Length: 283
Image (cartoon, rainbow, N blue to C red; front, side, top):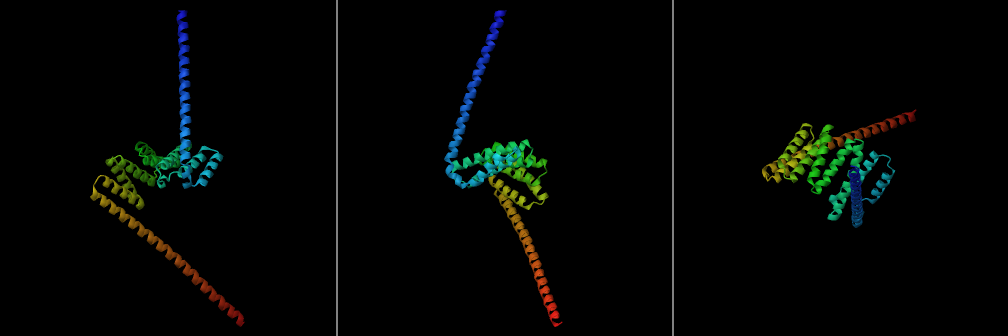
């Protein structure tokens, strides 16, 4: 019995040693992988160094300096968002490798900002981060990730009853569903966006929805409905321009009236002053 217990004890110790060695091997491999990943990222940054002139390097330097001085995660999150913004203009970049570098930088900084926003339950910051992540993943054609993040943005907007951003996220969601040819669900999202924009009198939002309807019908090869949606979009845009022109005209007329009254007052004041001086002189 004692020999059996001794053998079990030895076997247990042997198993512990084997597991420990396996963990050490795995940790070493992970460390090597991490070093390799960092080395690759450094090479990528070096390879794209010639393209940094396209960015505002002084702004990046300032933001990195502010990041070092930031005292809490909430402040850091806002700086990370500003750093991400420096790379979100990847659409202006023609070189594919540089564009991918921009996108990955935008993702990295946005994910860092997401950590700070979630820690302090900053719903506005979270919504902006989710929108940005969805945008980049959609550009990379990673539609599962893009859809998930825009759904998180949509949920936050619904909780806050933030109608303009509900409409914005529904438009984005519909466009992602068009990309994966889920046309029926895209139609449902656009119908909700249209109802919200019409009910809340948001003509600019309604115009964008109609434009997306035209795109959807085009994908569905329903060219008659595409033309109708495009016509509605153009009609709303014309209406918006007419309203803006009327408002501008009224503002200019009001300014002209005010200036005319001011001139009339000055003329009247000068005339009164001259009359008073003549009376004093005659005395």
